[in-house]
Length: 88
Image (cartoon, rainbow, N blue to C red; front, top):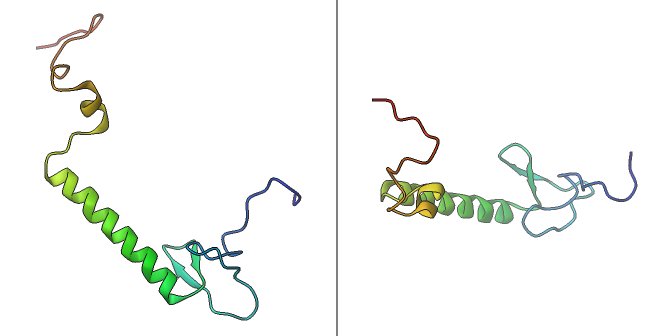
């Protein structure tokens, strides 16, 4: 154990700004295992996560296609592939 090549512990540095988390300073936690050096860094990450969730929700509610369907294109949907069995 130890030595080069191992990943840093999540309490070693702020998730957002990478400032070292050391000494007798407060550590601000978010979602269980994400540590921040300040309330400001944690709040910034929370705002970014909320914006990403809103964007994802908006894409789903506005009919965005899943990645596979988007890649196949509209002409591919509904086609039967060779070797497929169609049960009616």
